Length: 302
Image (cartoon, rainbow, N blue to C red; front, side, top):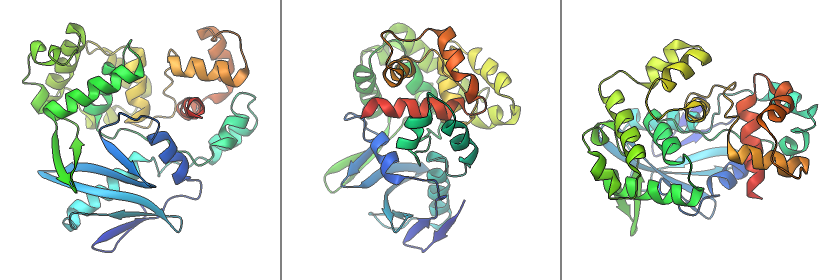
């Protein structure tokens, strides 16, 4: 992590291939997002470090990421954790040169990647949040998914109030592990989704599932197999989490509807492509399927 701690604020030095405005455009695509707020080019985020709730802001100042703490600077350790979170959140440790070289020769990606160059996979560093968000989004439209997420966070998450506005953290797996299915059905969760979310929380609370355990496997197929052994986690959900939480570039949610729509638009197709056709288009993306998918997702929000 390339970060300068000034005590009252941080300056993160991003890699050259980083476009903060593109990242903000992606983060701003959902009007109903509850876990961050965008105000005039400044990003507000609440993070829990140990038992402390830390509100921080991020903005671009002279090609640096300036991180400030509007309620007061936290401890040195907490500032370090905030810096590490942002570094991972924006995937700043990733060298994209190889991806850009690959994309420059690919008929599908060439124009899309050039248009959004500097966009990073804005991940979900918390494994529980990544998995639950993927489960919530299964087989429903995005607007309803954000509504469910908002109810879930407001009911079971923690928040602080600053200048009359509330800022929220995603609920902990320990909190959700104690719930019943009926507790979630009150907020329009289906029975199955409620069971899946509570089941994932219980797997994590018991220590059987953790980000650290998955990282230790150090093998995409093994990680995917491990996740898919958990009820409610299919191939798409597993790939979504592997891509967004573990930053594995070979993760490829090939069944994703957004990916299908993006390919239809980019290629000017009459119908959405089949899985076989997508496999053919993606033949040249090997090693970078996650980034190819992410850039194609970005093209949906123009």
